[in-house]
Structures are given as structure tokens and as C-alpha cells.
Length: 302
Length: 225
Image 1 (cartoon, each protein chain N blue to C red):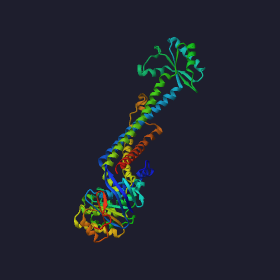
Image 2 (spheres, rainbow over the protein chains, first blue to last red):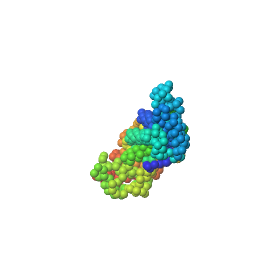
Image 3 (cartoon, helix red, strand yellow):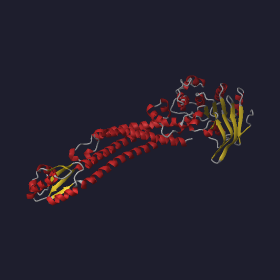
Image 4 (cartoon, rainbow over the protein chains, first blue to last red):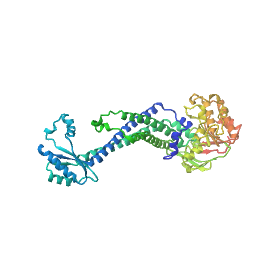
């Protein structure tokens, strides 16, 4: 039996009424294989959703937040407006700054609302004034800007987001990697499961194989009868599992922006095409696993 | 066609066959006899590549078996029809599909292969059992079905290992008559049996050589019984 035979892959879909019938039906094993492939495909869809969502999040945190910074004006109430103006003037003449604007009271209230409620009297509290800085080009030089601010605006503190952005991006990237790793592990588990099922089927059909050999069947012919059967079972199970997984992802509750990362778990745009590859991947894994099991078993059965 | 030259076969440290030289010429008829365990089945298996010799030369249809891969052996088996005493079928398939199995395996079909399946079933007297499953068949019916399966590819050689071991005398005669008929069509026939009465009865109808295996070797090769 050849290691990889394109003809065998074609034969899986083309089929042969006669060769399909030489292997006796195996009811319960067939159902188990279909169920296991379906369950694995269902899990693979979620692993992919996690991976792709993490990828999107890493992109947002890595690119969009990298182009912004915040300046906090921590000063007594009577000096806060003046220092804010002074900081804005410094920022206007800073290279790499596209725009800078002080957040309004309403915007700051909105930021604090999740912790202090909606009716916060922000004027009477020593809350720092925030300046949103949008960067351009290669961005601003945080070291130089801090030096200028400390000289001209003593109450200004620059936060260029790098301190907290880097671990978040790293975490999101790690989640993405874990998602792909999970998908890979699922594919490997499918391979192991199909190998075991195929080996059991080949061993259980030793008499069938002996009869086929006696009448001149090649290992390719015998192997194909098993390969086709297990590949189609894995394809069928994984197609159903993938469909159910995608429906489950669609039905995930949407908590809006407040939900944060968890409600972003799913597929967006062309990402929806990625889970459609799961049945093909599982089918290919089943094809390769059954082929390897058949080669090994037929070599052992003289 | 099938040639063994100083062939030996060992298994598990013991030599089962030793220094076997035998040539099955086209159209010849041979009996292989000897006590149980003498190595008749082993010799038959060597003749269709199910076993490989541990010494000597075995040529199947002109090719040395040592140079053959598994696919080549499979092709040899399409030219050799084999009938065993304990014949095996695919029990989930009806008899006609079992008989036509060699054609299916070779990618041919009963009509396209130039073989009339119905005619063959009629020749072995099993037309009425065409749709029966193998476990439903009697011993004699199984042997005749095995013969039909063995000849459907119109092989050059028929090997029958104790084909009459499980059937009564009348049925044995009927089966042997079919084998003699095949030999008259030009097929080479080798029958392993320890039933000397059967050999005598057959020799009345066909010129047959009788080979006897004893002490791991072929004795009285070429001598008539």
C-alpha cells in the first residue's frame, strides 16, 4: 500500500459499489465514530472561535492603543484648568502628536460611572483632568515629553499605555496560540480515535481480509474499502458537529460593550469561513489515520 | 507455470518441507497425497504465494517469487484458483456476489469479464441458491461455490486442498468431475488429498500424476498410484 495515494483520496468520494460491500456493516462502531468526530468538531469550532477572537483583541490592543496616550493633570482645583491649558500647548508642539484634547466633565463622569454611579459631582472632587492624545507617524517620544511636562506643567503625568498594554497583548497572543494548539490537539485526538477504530475494524475483519487476499485483492483495494468507510464517517460526524458548533457560537448572548472580551468570542467577517475547514481537516486526518492503520495491519496479516 | 526447485520451508525453528522440486506444466493434472501434517497444505500455500520458501527457488508464472512485491503476489493469485477444505466466504454477501468477488476485486464485472455468472452457477448446480448467504449452505454447496469462485477469473491453475474433506462420496465425485472437466479445458489442476479411493476413481477419467509427501520431501514423484 502506498504512503499517500491521490487515487485513494479520489476513491473516497467516487466510491465503488462492489468494494463498499466487501466490508460488513458495523452498526455501533460506526455510530461511535460519527459521534466522536462530531463532538471533536464541535469543540474545534469553539477553539477556533477563541483563537480568532483573541487574535482580534491582540490586534486592537497592539495597534489601536499603541497610537494613543493619556496625560493626567493632578493639581489643586484652582490650578487644574491652567495646567491643562499649559499641557495642551506643550502637546501641540510635540512631534508625533496628531491631536490632543481634554476630556469634558461629562466624559469623565461616564468613565467613573461604573464605580461611583451616574450622578457624580465631579467638580467638587479632586479628580485629575484627563487629556486624550492621538499619535501619528512613529508616535511621540515619551521620555522627552515627560521631561518637558515636568518642567512646564508640574502636575502632568504621561501615560503612554505601554505599561499595561504589553501584558494584555501578550495574554491575547497567548490565548490565540492556545486556541490553535487546542485545534491541533483535537485533530490529533481524532486521528488517534479513528486509528483505534480502524485497527479494531481491520482486526475484526481478518477473515474478510483473508478471503479478499485469496481471490487476488491488493492491499490498496482492501485498504480503500476501510479508508473510504472511516473517512466518510468522520466527514459526516464533523460536518454535523461543525454546524452545531457554529449555531452555538451564533447563539452566544450579546452583552454589548459592557461584556468585554467574552461577548467578543466568535467569528467576524471572513472568519466565518474558517470553521468550515474543520470537517475537511478531520476528514483528511481520518483518511491519513485509517491509511496508516490499514498499511500497518495488512503488513502484519500475512 | 509453477516451478519449485530445491525448495525448503521452515517455521518456528523446524523444517516442514525440504528439497522440494516440482514443476506444474500447463494442462497437467496432479494429486498430492501423504499423511496428515506431512506438509501438503504448506506446499499448496507456496504454490500461490501465501508462503515464501526459506530456501530454494520458487517461480510463479516465470517470475521468481523473491523478486515479487505484495501487489505482484496478488496478481499471481488472480491466475490461480484456490479451493480449501475449510472454505471461507464473505458471510454478509449472497452467494452470487461471493462467486463474483474475484472479478470485483480485479475491477471487472461478471458481464464485462466475459464470464457468464449464471452459466457458472448452473455448471456447479447452485442456480437455485444464488441469493443464499454462505452460512445457509451445506458442505457440498460450499465446496462447489468455492470451485465456482476459483474458476470465475478463468485461472491457469486450480489448487484444491482437501476439497472433498467435508462432503459425502457422491458430492466428492461430482466435485472431482468438475475438476476433471476444467483440466480438459486446459487448466492445470493440483489436488491435495489423503483419500486414495478418490485418486483411483479420478484416474479412471484423466491422466494424473500422483505425488506423495513424506518426511518433508516429495517421494514417488512421477510414479502412478
